[in-house]
Length: 158
Image (cartoon, rainbow, N blue to C red; front, side):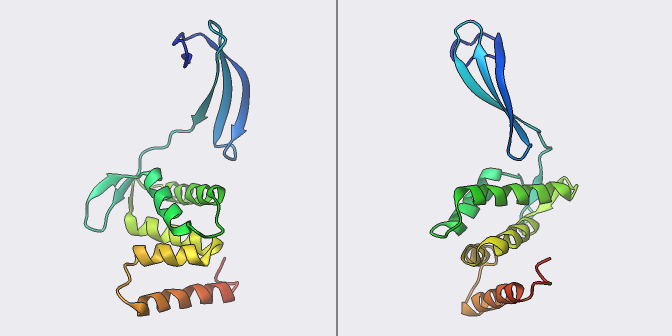
């Protein structure tokens, strides 16, 4: 690993620690030459997912795009940044668990909605309104009744 200060590739690891529930390793390093200390992260590299859009177009899965949608849905709610990151982690995990190289945008949207329904009703409805492209108040009412039914029937939540 090259030093971020002097570019010499002779560094030593001072400390290693698991982060992100064991999905990454944080390493504190020190340059042998200039004694500069810096931090690196190691993550398991997953294969790239291809997202199939509703119009048939294909693009690489982009976690930042997922997070942007989640942050928009959760803004001005009690959902904090850590919870949003955890939702993104769970969504990503579920997509990779499918074992497919390609995933439809509708599948991603449904997984996100399932996760948001569990943590915050307002965020769920906000995301659903964009994802489902409601044309009128009837669409909102239908979605609200679905989440109310889900909340009132604990058997459906499992």
